[in-house]
Image 1: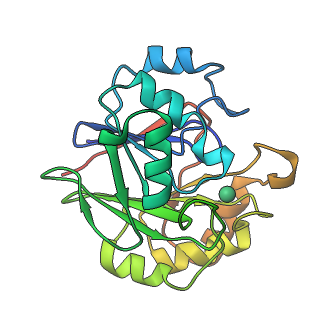
Image 2: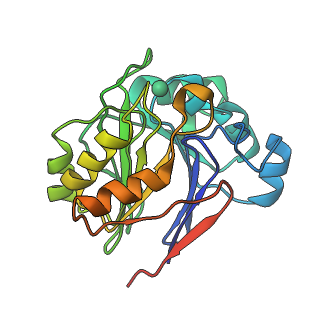
Image 3: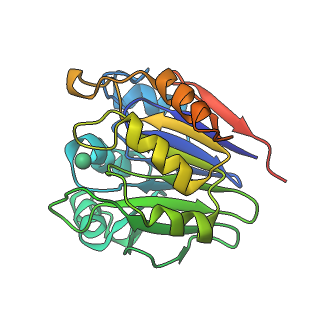
Length: 234
Ligand code: ZN
């Protein structure tokens, strides 16, 4: 079984093969159902991996504090950022530093791969991330503009579901996201990184309409913040 819970902005909880992943953990973002770290921790008793795509505040979020709360959680990020966050949390033994394109075997059944992202980051390269199991793969694009290597991501990792930014200004907008769907060919897309602030206002139903107009058969799953979508995995 796999499930994805959107917490608003770029923050997701992903459950895959009984492991709990928290991606870009700004868990108290303005759209989030959690108004404090405490209320998040009360709801999620276990997090196995915290993944951060780049060092902007709206993606690092509360990762240092959460690493202190979840004493068994590992921090996965591009080398410089993983080492920085782990040292700030006094958890250097829990750092899983990686780099773009290098598959990292997290367990017998799950591999993590950092992908390129066209964006900026002061500590390490900006990235997206793929979580890969035998029959399911999730691509979280991070903050990025459109790039043609998404076709390679499709070919190599066949994303079951792609989490794509659609808010524009700092990342892809809807027109670019439709092209990304064309390149990635995922079965499902969950839109993210929109409506957190005025400058990234977007209507995700436009993405569904434009994808349909282009004849793409990807299912667009528009999640309200806090909602979980479950996938049946063979
Ligand atoms: Zn950013």
